[in-house]
Amino acid sequence: MYGSFRVLFQVLWAHLLCGWVLGSELTFELPDNAKQCFYEDIIIGTKCTLEFQVVTGGHYDVDCRLEDPDGTTLYKEMKKQYDSFTFTASKNGTYKFCFSNEFSTFTHKTVYFDFQVGDDPPLFPNENRVTALTQMESACVSIHEALKSVIDYQTHFRLREAQGRSRAEDLNTRVAFWSIGEAIILLVVSISQVVLLRSFFSDKKTTTTRVGS
Amino acid sequence: MMLSVPAAAGVLLLLAWIYPSDGLYFHIGETEKKCFIEEIPDETMVIGKYRTQLWDKQTSSFLPSTPGLGMHVEIKDPDTKIILSRQYGSDGRFTFTSHTPGEHQICLHSNSTKMALFAGGKLRVHLDIQVGEHTNNYPEIAAKDKLTELQLRVRQLLDQVEQIQKEQNYQRYREERFRMTSESTNQRVLWWSIAQTLILIVTGIWQMKHLKSFFEAKKLV
Image 1: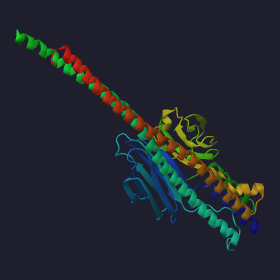
Image 2: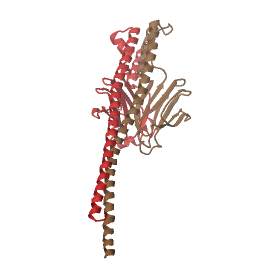
Image 3: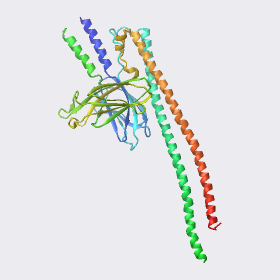
Image 4: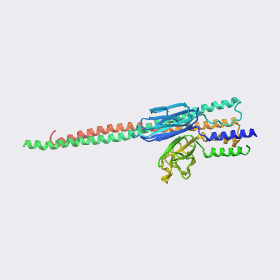
């Protein structure tokens, strides 16, 4: 009876764990002069990592600030393009991190962040965690970790590529508008030069004839 | 003792489903619309779960849940075509599968019509968005297909590799778009430079010719 209770408890625990979020990755738009804050309740002793990257907008920089439940600033950086910060929660409570675009007047930015709290939940609720994993299982675990880092690298590569692509598209539109604008300016300036010169000489002509006679 | 165990189990299970996520949260104003971008390859499943809490001025705290307050969820595909536009309750779960690769936009805003509800002005939204292979619930898959632990681990690895492959395909498609944009810029710079030089030369010649004929007419040359 005690054994069945233990099994039930472990299955429920696994169920709860799978329902619990242990990592959030979001990309959001930060308008100019705006500040966006996110909060998370963390248990003491959990190892957490905050990683952010500015994807599009202006000079591709943003202010970031991370505070613990008492309001102490754990991390503060101004105008940073990309950074990664790892810390271990020293207190129980709500941790807050904010991204600020208050220094910018008209460019809104797209910011990506990845906030990992603790480790991933276990895949399979093991009744006997004391026995070591077999060779096959530990090989699977190491492949899983390696693939996780591959996916992570892919994400960062995708963000850098998005940045490059948005700059290239900006450049393309700017070249188009500026070329058309310059051609128009060229035509307007040359025609007005001729008109202006003509106006000078038509006045002078009447004065010379008057002097002559 | 015998009776309380199933009861406690039932309560725990219920809690696990009613409060699907208790992770990241943020505050949203009454008419504010919060948008999140997910850049994903095609045929990728995305599951979003949210939970709302309303600020109660009397108790100066957030109430557990607010019945009657809904959130409107709008999802746009990379061609800015709306693929999902639905109203959910105060706790909701939305899911969609992308059919074109690119930037999908997920927007949330509250549908509150009663101004009194938002007197405090703050609504706390717990949000969790899972993409691709993170949407798979492995214990459920193991139970359904009756897999051993090793088989489940291999299934997870297969899902991860499939996601990596999809992302690489998408990467190839994006790189092609980038290359097209750069080539278009290159072409534009080339042709517009030639055109502007021609305009310059033509207007210069026209100016000289016109002025020459003008001065000849005025008998100054």
